[in-house]
Length: 483
Image 1 (spheres, rainbow, N blue to C red):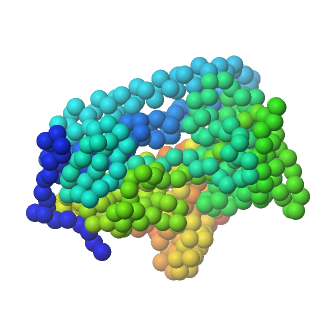
Image 2: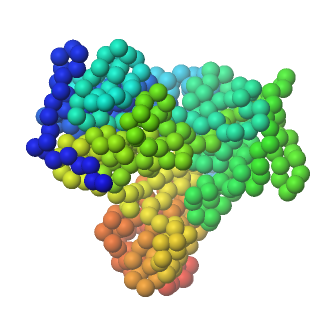
Image 3: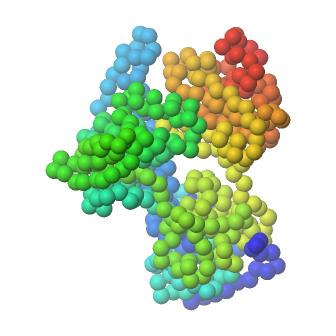
């Protein structure tokens, strides 16, 4: 049922301290701030109820610290990989892990202050409340002993790392992504459990900063990515000395005198892997405990995330949700976008529907992995007659000039209409290149149109043009800038 409320239905209610609100937002991360700012910009009164550290996952323990340390690791790797250029001697940098961690923490503090705490005074219509855990009740929210009333509530409480069900894991001093990024002393070795984007990013970062890394996953790396793209990343990580163990089952974990012992089973045989520390990166779980959702009829999905419709409304009239707490995409920019969709519908502003058809995603490894739209398997499942194009980076002039041909580009299109359906890329500048393909999908371009578009020479993004031309040409036989 469409639960969008029209503007003339808006009303206000007062909390125990006399403040009147049009909207209560529970959670002060990216989604919560996006919702609050959007509502305040329309003259609405907002009660922003804190849940955890202000700023949420991204700035505190996710995007900002991880990408800062990944960049630091890239700087170290740049010295050792310089030998790929004739006449350049490689050099190794000393790494003070503790100083890198402290510098990252300082950056996090600065960004939390600048992008969240210092922003609050600029929005007079937003009242920030942080007096204890919040619980949804009929007609509003209870925060400690205080009751805040409003006709509409938006839940944006985010998520936290998930601990998998492996025998003995609760007896081991494990690290999650937050724990590794704040670890004061560099471990000699780690086992990274989980081959998703977080596991791959952290494994390469730690390895480049001097940690011996074993990356372990049940299936393959990046199981949601195209096989060709995942294989390109796998080979790149292996070439840097990371041990990758795939196609296995986790049996048990135990703490020993020298670290942890992970027992796996592969091909019917048990194997034991050892390291100083175990880093668990096997997904995240929504923060919904003690919110009282069941009492109000707010239904979760099988994974515990809040189910929302395209208007971001939950199964309870008057309650919306956005961000990692929902069953939608788990990216900070989609959390902010989803919150804007929710607020517009909740307050009867511009009607919006959640649309991720042209949503780009990025894995900040090296090479970077990025994608947008449908994969080949997804396109076939959606009923398309599919055609694909695969170009390895040795066909891209930019890669040849950079002496770094690690990577691949794959495009997916409808064979009948020639319309682009999606694509993925593994390349050193993949994160920036993917936005061009996102725009192509957004405006319904065909492979022919993309192949005829003018791209600047000696750029990674030019690889998209070459991949588009590869549907009906052998780009290896084209001269530079041909076509």
